[in-house]
Length: 326
Ligand code: DGY
Picture 1 (tube, rainbow, N blue to C red):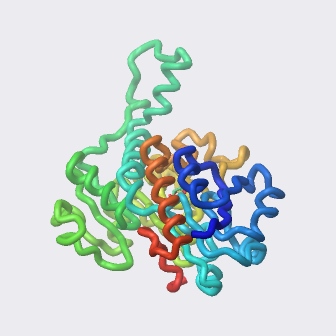
Picture 2: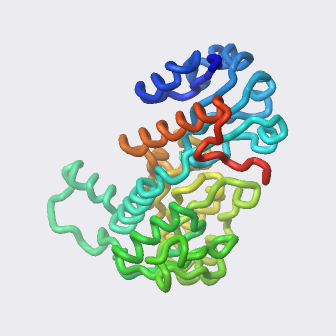
């Protein structure tokens, strides 16, 4: 097979880089660190692999030989989907291998926000644990409370399993299409119920957003949505930051509608230093670590590498993303 040119635009583990180098000519250039090197490699690139950088029409214009883009992420909001489709460039991503890890992260955030884990750990660290804590520092139970999920794909279902089977939580979910639980998650039958949005918001003690960023979901969680939440609800976002109106989120926290929020994602990442969400006393912020474990990030890189090798060899990648609907 003729060697092709691959542009790696975010660091890959050495073993996966070696798989690419064995068959193709590889340039590593992270545009966030060296934009000129990235731009210089684009005109000859047949394949791109990486994440967390927008591959938009302007980037594609500079890459006339491009055949395939392999994202080391499940989310595809960084890619100009319609443009990729129009130009006949394949897009692959990494669904499946990160579901349980992201669900773990979301549950950690939910527990931390409700039981005030970070705030109380800081109290100990800072030498302020001088007497038994009083009611003013108590948290709220998680077990047995109602969980409302906005988005019920594979990750949403993994969160629902933890909630329903581990914590005895009734689960409501909002999804555009009904999910065939008998086929996809039989253990959740009778435990997770598709519920109209207004009812879900009014009933849930914890509202967890796991929405992909699309033209339908951008800014979807706005003041009107927060206003319908149960007073004292906890809001968690493990999907995409831009699905939330952050000003409305802050108003819901400060106005008392929300008791707390746990956020792994933000409208702008890294979170700007002047964002009030960074230091808000009732926000637990994380630096977008949903899938960030050694095991899972490696599994994502491995799947993305296989996807790209397959695409460049004319085989159908295992996790091809259908750009035709964009
Ligand atoms: C994903 O895989 O989409 C994660 O959110 C990392 O971007």
